[in-house]
Image 1 (cartoon, rainbow, N blue to C red):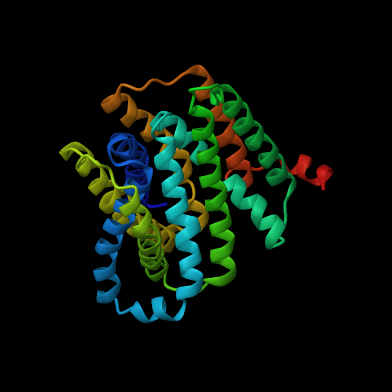
Image 2: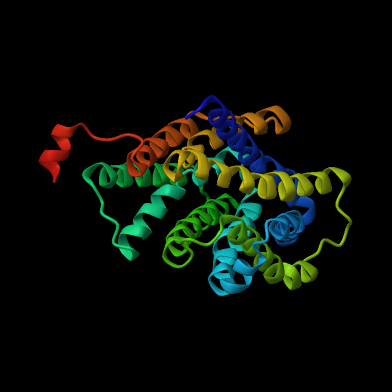
Length: 297
């Protein structure tokens, strides 16, 4: 990667890491449904003019059906899940579970699209999911009055949906302009969440701080982040762009520590390391030595 690409990749990780901070700042006052709705509506209003300026609205009209599905599985429901999780677990912990997205993506691609699993990828899946299970076991509690267990399950449901969306996009939207997919998915999410947001709109008006967090979440962490991500895919390829996954927890923990005084436990650190090791093997960033690959095939 060129130096400019590395800077963009780091900037994208910082922005997406901040999304977990902003969800923590806004979820309590907005509630998960209203916050997710504000996020996708804001992102839609930001992206639609850009789509029109590039003359790609026709692609959105032509492929609206699969784009609508992507909107549900890659934006509306995951954003809702992470907003719910933000009510009871830290930004850093949510981001660590989010780092398992490539694991679910590889597993679903193998089951659905018949993508080949090499020995490195198989080992990576085993290691990564063991890290997820260990961290979930350590942090989840379903005791009366506790909500961390449901929050952990919400994070894992979101990553599973992200994994499904990757295979669905590859299967039905290959060749469609990425900006059309991004904009259409936010628009469909906005339409889907409009009525629930009205029904679950907070009775007390959220504070300026909560509104600011929601606005930054919508424009910065969704609208701008999509543009940066698709620029990186064009410049350095999808595999290298996916390496942003490894940096997001670093920034999420940093922002949580700086602004919300959240801590990082030894269990979180170990769990994150195991998940990222599994993810690096699954995505091909790390590979088994040739000797082990030959004798495992």
